[in-house]
Structures are given as structure tokens and as C-alpha cells.
Amino acid sequence: MSEHLSFPKEKIKILLFEGIHESAVDSFQAQGYTEVERLTTALSGDELTAALDGVYMVGVRSRTHLTREVLEAANRLMAVGCFCIGTNQVDLRAAAERGIPVFNAPHSNTRSVAELVIAEMVMLLRGLGDKNTAAHQGRWLKSAKGAYELRGKTLGIVGYGHIGSQVSILAEAMGMRVLYVDVLPKLPMGNAVQLDSLEDLLAQSDFVSLHVPQDPATVNLIDAARLGQMRAGSYLINASRGTVVDVDALADSLRQGHLAGAAIDVFPREPASLEQPFESPLQGLSNVILTPHIGGSTQEAQRNIGREVASKLTAYSDQGGSVGAVNFPELSLAPHQDAHRLLHIHRNQPGVLAAINRALAATEVNILGQHLQTTPEIGYVVTDVDRACADLREELASLPGTLRFRVLY
Ligand code: NAI
Image (cartoon, rainbow, N blue to C red):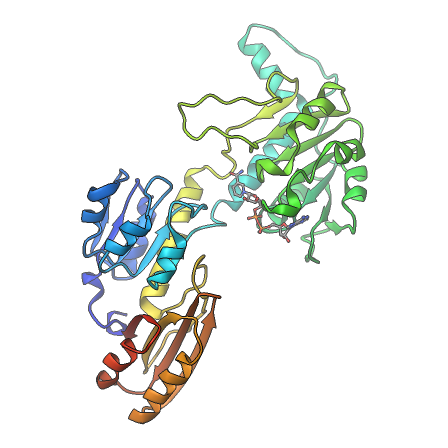
């Protein structure tokens, strides 16, 4: 693959911060990138700027802040990988303005969340949280009262995306009947049934599990009125985002005995660090499982994140493919066999594509393929041509609006 790059892959310096999983290093090396340094810590300020000198691709988690100043000083930086879900530790706009795509791993922990939901349903139906606490305290709550099997119960899934559909498959394997709602028509897994209304789902379900994104439409999606529409004695599970449930209303519903229990992994206000205390109106209520936003926190998820982000970075470096970039036009590109690939990143302003093609026409290269994708700010044109056109490089790199120009051959 190294012949596809304008210089050998082993010269592409990659720096990974914050103990990113070894799977990332393995993935880079498998693709021929050997110049990979992995640090266990985060850096900041001048130390971070110095460390990024000569680095082409950087991997961060949540504690390394790639600010505008840091990005501007990173003289070789070509792409950023956030080996996590969130990307707000990176100034995405500043990165885009320098033609630097930022990638993350939004779905590597899908299965981990789905498994937690299944475990929680069993725990809630058997009162395991409370029985465990009692046993630790020396009390022996041996009783079948209020304890049930999962088999035959109805699960209502709100949001049938990556996680919701995985929960659906696992729940059916446990013998459950699965209903779901989504804002889009979604292909059912197994025998699951999509309903038209959330109200119907709430009225029919023994468990309601939330798997929607955080957006204005999902804030307090489950409020006092919706909790009232849930079946008496049913259970609520939220491992999506804390804003989706009105936790005060949930606490009321649990106290009044309308809901029989809940498992909540995400909260409207979560401690920013391990040292800060955690407070919630749900504390102290019976049959309520509270977990510290660990739905996606498993070793497998960390390993998958390492692989997923490393593969997005190498796809971008090797082919120019930018699928999964959060701040940059997304292009899915096949390998450029027997072609030279010109990658032109520019401000999204009129006339750049025409100017690129005028320059290409003047040299009489044969264009084998061309792809354009834009965001409101950035344009990304990838052109495959049949021969090297070294004479063109300077011209294309200096067209008005150009942010970055790269050739793969
Ligand atoms: P996804 O984007 O694959 O699926 C979300 C689904 O919700 C989509 O099918 C979408 O059409 C649907 N949807 C959007 N608005 C809706 C609405 N108002 N009503 C009904 N459906 C709606 O997302 P994914 O990966 O399944 O994640 C789901 C949630 O889980 C997200 O909020 C994510 O942040 C959270 N999450 C939590 C983790 C944890 O540690 N607890 C870990 C990973 C994700």
C-alpha cells in the first residue's frame, strides 16, 4: 500500500494520548504505519504543542484538548482521531478551517449497552439490587414475592437505531415480545413490531427502554404525563442520555408505586470527575438501579474503539476516504488502482471545482474519476488521473480558497 502515498507510511508519525487501547497500534501497524507512539497520559499547553511537532495523525480521548491554538501550531497534522464518542475536546471548526478531518467511534460500544439493558431487566424483575444490598447488610430476603421471569414479557424500545435494534435481538432470544417506535420506518429484527405511537408502546410494555439521541425533540421525552401512560407495575430503563427523562417525575412515579422499578445509567447532571459527588432524586428508592454512565464502558468496547478509529484514520491517509468525519465532507472512496489521486480541500466558495478542472484540462491528463462533497464551510474534491502531474501540484495547491492539497500515488 505504501506506493499509494507520496512518501513512505513508516515516515507518517502517529501520536496516541491517554492510554488508547493497544488495538489501535496493532491496526496501524497492520496497515504499514510503524511510526506510532502511544502515551498513557494527556498533555496540555506548550508540552502538547511540542509533542505534536511533526505529527501527522493524533489520537486523543476526552482529556487532551485540541484547541485552535494547538491545531494552528501543529505543523504537519493531517487528521485527528477521538478514540471515544464525544468530540467536544477538539475545536472542530478550527480543525475544519485547516482541512483536518476529525473522526470518532460512535458505535463501537453498541453491544456493551445492549447487554447491560438485558442484565438490568433480569435484575429489576427479581429485585436483585435490593436483595444484594440486603444480603451484604446481613438481611436474608428469601422470597418469590414480586419476582418474575423475563420470558413472555413485553419490551418497548424507544429509538430503534444501533443499540435499540441490538437490544431487540437479545430480548427476543430471552423470550420477550418486542415493540418499538422510531421517528423513521425501521426494518424490524426478528419478530419485533414497529408501532406508530409512543403512547401505544407505553401502554403495552412491561419494560420501556430508551435509545434515542440527545436532541431538542428528546428533552424530557419521558415526562410525568408519559410516565402516567406506562402500565402500572412496569419498569423504565434509560441508558441513552440523561436529558431524555424528567428524573423528578420518575422519582414521584416510583414513590407512588406506579412504576415497579427503574434502571438509570445517564443523568441530567453527572459528576465531571471521579472525585465529585453524585446526587440524584432517584437515590434511596427501592428497586432502582443507578449506574455511573457505564453502559458502553467495557474492555471489548475500548478494543473496538481502537480499531474503529485507527481504521478511519488509515482509510483517510491511504485513500482519502472520510466516512465518519464529524466536521468534514464525507466521501466513501474505493482504492485508486493504477491512478494518481489528487485530494483538494478548500473553503466552500464558488468556482473552486471549475478552477481545478481548468488546471487539469490544460495539462491534458485523463480524469478517471472525480468526487465532490461539501459541508457549508468545506469543499472536498477527489480526482483520480491517469498519470503523475507534478507540474500541477503547485498550481492546485495555490488556487484561491485552498486549505490543503495532497497527492496519493
Ligand atoms: P442511533 O443514532 O444508532 O439510534 C438512535 C435512534 O433513535 C435512530 O433510529 C433514530 O431515528 C431514533 N430517534 C431519534 N429521535 C427519536 C425520537 N424522538 N423518537 C423515537 N426515535 C427517535 O444511536 P445509538 O448508537 O443506538 O445510541 C442511542 C443512544 O444511546 C444515544 O443517546 C447515545 O448517546 C446513547 N449511548 C449511551 C451509552 C452509555 O454509556 N450509556 C453508550 C453509547 C450510546
